Length: 212
Ligand SMILES: *[C@@H]1O[C@H](CO)[C@@H](O)[C@H](O)[C@H]1NC(C)=O
Ligand SMILES: *[C@@H]1O[C@H](CO)[C@@H](O)[C@H](O)[C@H]1NC(C)=O
Ligand SMILES: *[C@@H]1O[C@H](CO)[C@@H](O)[C@H](O)[C@H]1NC(C)=O
Image (cartoon, rainbow, N blue to C red; front, side, top):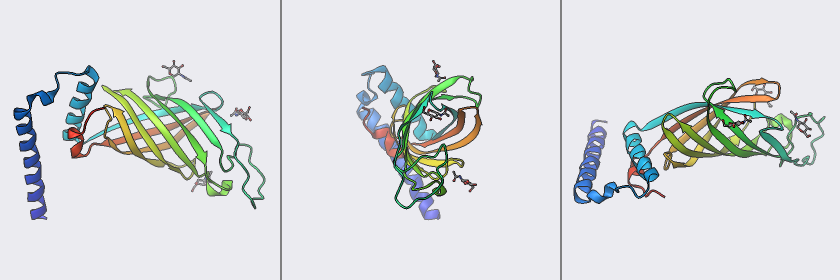
C-alpha cells in the first residue's frame, strides 16, 4: 500500500514536472487563442483534471406527442400471447424525443439544456420490464459549462432508475467519462419528469489530448 502511494505520488510529481517543463519549453502550447471556445475548453479540462469530477442534476421534461413520439411501431414477437397493454412498446419500437432539461423538477423552472435521442424497445413482451436501448445527446449550458455529453445504454425497467455510461462529450465535456443516472420522479397528465444526475470524470491524459 505504502509503495503504491509513493509510486502514485512520484507519478503525480513527475506529471507536474513534465507539465511545467513542457510549458517552459513550449510556451506556445498555451495557444494564444486559435478560437475563444477551444481556449475555454482547455482551461476547463485543466481545471477539471485537478477537480477530477463535475456533477450536475437536471430534470428531463417529457410530454408524449409533444416532445417525444413513437415513430416506429415495432412487431409482436412470435409466441407472445398476451393481452396487449395500451401503452406497450413491442419489440423494435422506436421512440424519439427532444426534451428540455430544467434546473428543478418543476417544468416551469429555468431551462439549462436539452436531451435529444431515441429509445429502441428490445423486450419481447411487457413482462421483461420494458427493456430498451437508449441513445441520447445531452446538451448542457449550466454553471459556466457549455457542451454535450453522449450516453448509450440499456433501460431495464421504465419505472426504476437506469444508469447509462457516458460514451463521450464535446465542448467543455470533451474527453469526459462517467455515468448518467436517470430516475422517474413524477408524472402529471402527459408530462413525465426524470431526474438526470450527470457524474463526470476526466482521466489524467485528457489535459494532453488534442482539441477538435
Ligand atoms: C399519442 O398519439 C398516439 C397516436 O395518435 C396515440 O395513440 C396515443 O394515445 C397518444 N398518447 C398520448 C399520451 O396522448
Ligand atoms: C424548451 O425550452 C425552450 C428554451 O427555453 C423553449 O423556447 C421551449 O418552448 C421549451 N419547450 C417546451 C416543450 O417546453
Ligand atoms: C419495474 O420493477 C418494479 C419493481 O421491481 C415492478 O413492480 C414493476 O412492475 C416493473 N415495471 C415494469 C414495467 O416491468
